[in-house]
Image (cartoon, rainbow, N blue to C red; front, top):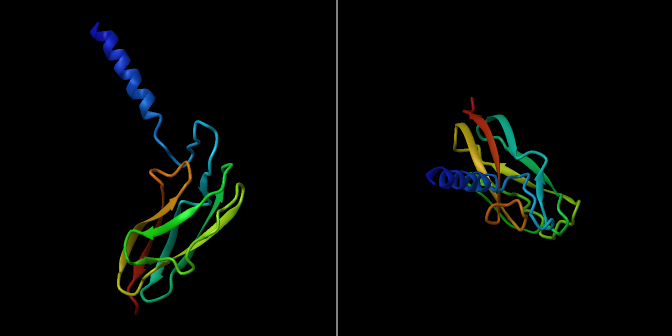
Length: 141
């Protein structure tokens, strides 16, 4: 009896382990917006302290319903969004982008920061899809 109970417990754990959302997640009902980034991490490379550091995240709505971005926030105050983000819904198959600025003025050294994209995508975990920026700031000469 213990073996049968253990087998059922094992099967339950395995089936739930495979149910975690990811960037490849598709809703079971087959519908909804899906946010797919060209790259989920942008490497700024080596930057010189005080120089401007702006890069662009580009994404596509690979779902079948409009994608709405309600907000984008950085992990800290060192990350800003100079042009904001798309305010209009991104239609299925539509592409959009937003720019990220990293403040190199104060911080020297390696950085690895999360960007939280608040949206209605089915592959967003609790309404948040995370992307990252990273790089290295060298002191100005």
